[in-house]
Amino acid sequence: VNSRLRDVFGDDARALPFGSILQSVYLEGSDLDLCFDVPGEAISVVEFNNGKQFDSTRQVEALRRLARVLDGNFQVIETRLWAGLKIPLIIVRYQSSSGFMIEADLS
Image 1: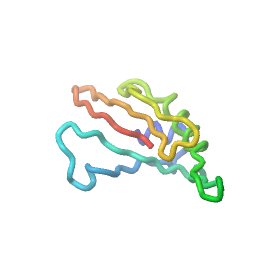
Image 2: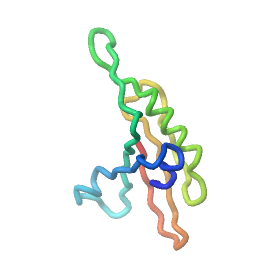
Image 3: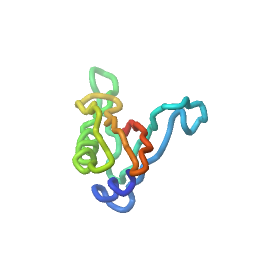
Image 4: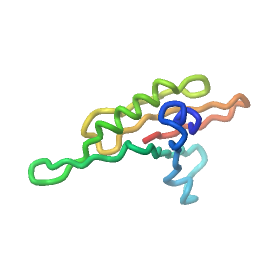
């Protein structure tokens, strides 16, 4: 994932794992949760009806750019990339040449 991130966003982009795997509470078959840090792609917060709401437009576009380069061992299973979604994501399956397979949520 990191090499694809760098291809799209430059050398400073990186995937950061979080969730059950880092907390050591995962079960066999659990997916891998990855967010990615891309300088210049900060979360936007906008005022909406006297409250604050996330504007995920930039994150959605960044995930779409990443999805376009996921090929080979990656298979995009599902995308949740609509504007206004607090945490847009791409669900992918990765299979290594040895047959190891894992699903990952990229956000």
